[in-house]
Image: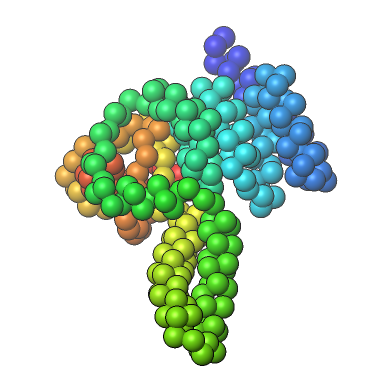
Length: 258
C-alpha cells in the first residue's frame, strides 16, 4: 500500500509539474515569481519549486530567486538542495543576513561537521573588504576612481605651480593604488560569480577515492549536503577539496556544481 501511495504521489507531482511548466512558458519572470511566491504562502511547496525552477530554466537568476528556492526546498526537507540554493544566493549577495541564518539552520541537518582550516588574517580582511560591496558597485567605483586619477594627471601635467604639481603627483599615486585594488576586487568577484568550481554533494553517502577510479583507495566518507571545492575534473570524476584541507576524487554524478 505504501508503494502504491508513493507512486500515486509521484505521478500527481509529475502532472502538476508538467502543467505548471507549460503554463509558465508564456508568462513573464515577474509573473512567475509572484505565482511561485503565492504557491509558497499556500504551502504548495512542490508546485512552488517547479515554478521557481522554470524561472531559472528561462535564464534568469538573482539572489532573491535563489533564496526563495532555498526556502522552498527547506520546507520540502530537501536540505542538500536548500543548501545549494542558499549558497548560490550568497554568491550574488554575500552580506544577506537572512540567507546566512537560513543556511546555518539547513546545515544542522547535514551529517558531516567539517571544521574549516583558519584563513590568514590578511585574506580574511581582503574577503571582508571584497564582500562589503556588490560586483556592480565595485565596477562603478573603479570607473569613478579612474576618472579622478585622469583628472589629477591632467592637472599634474598642466600645472605651473610647484605646490599644485606636488599635490597632484601624490594624489595620483594614491589613486593608482586605489584603482588597482578596486579593479582587482571587481575582477575577482566577476570571475567568482561566473565560475562553477564549488559544489554540494547530493548523494546520501559517498566514499572519496585517492584517484579517479572505483578500485582506488578509500580516503574518507562524505554525506549529502556537504560543500566541496572542485580542483580538477576528468572522465566523469572530480577532484575535490573540503574545508579541513582533505583532498580526493568522487564521481561527478554525486555533486551539483554552482
